[in-house]
Image (cartoon, rainbow, N blue to C red; front, side):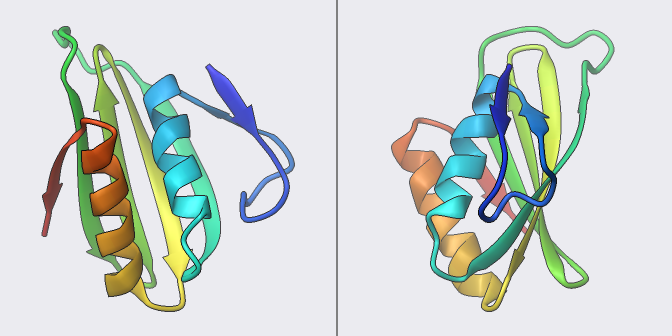
Length: 104
């Protein structure tokens, strides 16, 4: 588990999965991103494996980014001045870090 605080991170202290921290760091470097909010860490039933996946969805005023790695799952909510540019930035950064990326 990793922690992040200050800057674009929306709480004084947030706990992230290792994969969630990678994606949150990518998002925080984007000039269009104004805030990164972490969600609850869950372990889906029956999940295992080592695949790393990211799903990026446009939800209201934010991007909902679901990060799955092995048996852990975490959602991040990314607020940006230009959601489409931020989505493309996160997608490219995640692919560079060997995540499978889906968007819709």
